[in-house]
Length: 327
Image 1 (cartoon, rainbow, N blue to C red):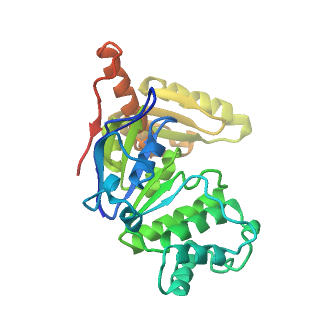
Image 2 (cartoon, rainbow, N blue to C red; image 1 turned 180 degrees about the vertical axis):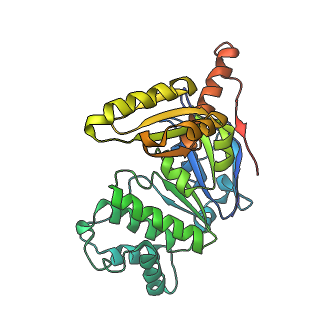
């Protein structure tokens, strides 16, 4: 189900939470909303699920104006907030049964079993929530949103506070939803690698304004021609220092060089990267990897472009610079 956000404004007193972003979220996509703290992501989500109304502008979900839809928006949009808690004495199955009854769902037992299976909690369904890990609690929250089989899922920082295993499991669940259903999934995250893995397209917000929007691959490509060559020097401990020195001499003139204890990374033009890889002495290298610009580069490029535009305008905020890429 397509979501269309058109010139949405929201102000709280003197604070402008949203200053007119406009973009579309394609039906059936997994869409990421990125931004620094205070960028307006949570405000946008609250408007999207009908918890508040915009001062100006419009948000349509499947052609229905959310601000005017009332309870009908709940039939289309399910929301998992960043902090969702459940009574600790109840079992996971009991929690979902309460949610199913509140929504008046038919075939409750079957829907509960399907939701538990989708999020990987079937075996823990009859355990008290007090014994759930943070990751299991987040997956139970997701199961509660899946009960009504909504066409739109809105997830606010869904993996915040999870350990690496919990994050990986949650990612697998989101990928399964994307693969096996037609649901449109909208999520926010501060972890750019997470968004890069899960999302087809993204919108980047800053200070309530849209700075960039489009397919992840095209935003990465628009971020520049630089690539990163990461080199792991060869050699035993006694020869490693000299090997590293020789490698550094070879790459210093080709781009920006950074070092860690184990690697040397060079950010350079694609042509220089090809030359570098072909001319380095293989005896000095254990292995190397060439990486294209990631979403992090696109994110910082979008914010930097906005900053330069504000400076050119004399520090004003009237303009809304943005990089918009469409397939």
